[in-house]
Length: 70
Length: 201
Image 1 (cartoon, rainbow over the protein chains, first blue to last red):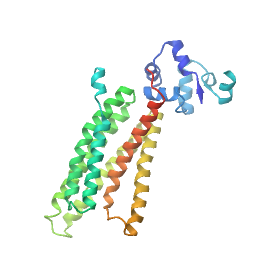
Image 2: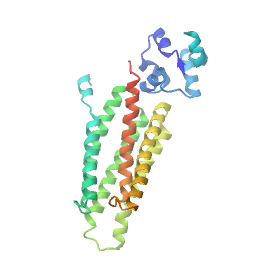
Image 3: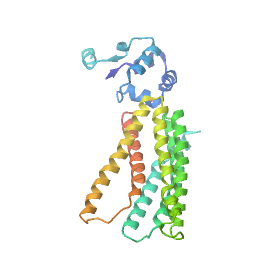
Image 4: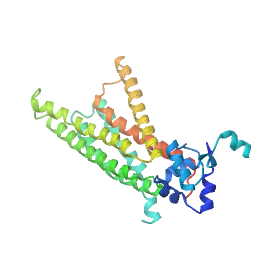
């Protein structure tokens, strides 16, 4: 699944560790999600959305939407 | 801690030494070069290498931002159980020659290693229950599946090879070290895949 985590982090000038601390997960987990190696569960996706004060679909994109956006 | 000391952490080196020793003991014991209980005692002594290996692995994980409270707790429990396992193996190995066959003490010594073996599985189960980081939990499950695959596939294969008289007999207690090594391989494999994805700060 595609996501906009890297961009959203950059906008806020957060490191992966900053985001990891806010989510109470390891930095490795943030990296795995960001690079698309691991898709978070729905509860974690909601936590990520809360941290950025966005809706889940503003952060995670369906493959088709991601292709259309390119 | 500065970067130079962090880079010095080489869990793979310790794991490799541990695996090489185990392989050597395994070969020497199935070829009959070493008589029981010598292999048991050697394996127990080899477990000492697990201490620097876990320390180095922890340092590397710390560096990669993969250490959670549950990991620390798991390591403490697992090392404790491993130490008890090694002591039980040495005790059982050293005492076999001095205790008459079929004495109740022999039964007790033979059953003794089951307790720390259960302790190690318990530590893993507690880890899966306590780990709040779902990605780390996912990795641990994957790694334990690699360990399970190693034990079941090699165990089944060896069993049939033995049935047809193609390979010598091996003791069933090899399952635990084999599983633990598979677990290590599994962890290293997921670590490698993570690195493959690139790990920007």
